[in-house]
Image (cartoon, rainbow, N blue to C red; front, side, top):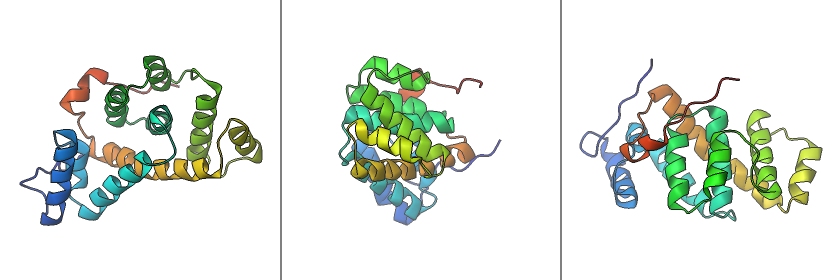
Amino acid sequence: MTQLTIQTLESAPAESKPLLQKSIDAYGMLPNLHGVLASAPSTLDAYQQMHELFVNTSFDAEELTVVWQGINVEHGCTYCVPAHTGIAHSMKVDQQLIDALRNEQPLPSAKLQALLDMTLEIVRERGRVSEKSLNAFYEAGYGERQVLEIILGVSQKVISNYTNHIANTPVDKPFEQFAWQKKAQ
């Protein structure tokens, strides 16, 4: 089992300290993921910036959750699925959508399903999506902007999911109640 250091505000490299303080100020705690990323200040900075950029896309709370959680589940991230379950609750996302994403079940609306389908095709096919899929995405009410915004979300999730796989990052206390394991295929 691999593991990376979870830095604290005291132990982190000097360049990471203001970034960690930003996390503490934003979340009222230091998320373990941010502690791990702090060992590489530029990676923590990139992650925080990507998060802010993605939150400020054209997606609403449900759509943000679909992209984040769709990728988290696809990647089998046992840290991010519980964290984003808690985040979805704080964003007042409907429980039916939260459960459907966690359990890999059909989503409650055709538009959200189209968003999840496009997100997963981008991830699984490394961006090589079919014209048929792209047209279905557009027909669901999305456009080129949203394709590119999904790629931003994928970029953010690659940093967090891959880091958590290597670090075996422990789930933060507030999210332990949302523990999750990928179902066997």
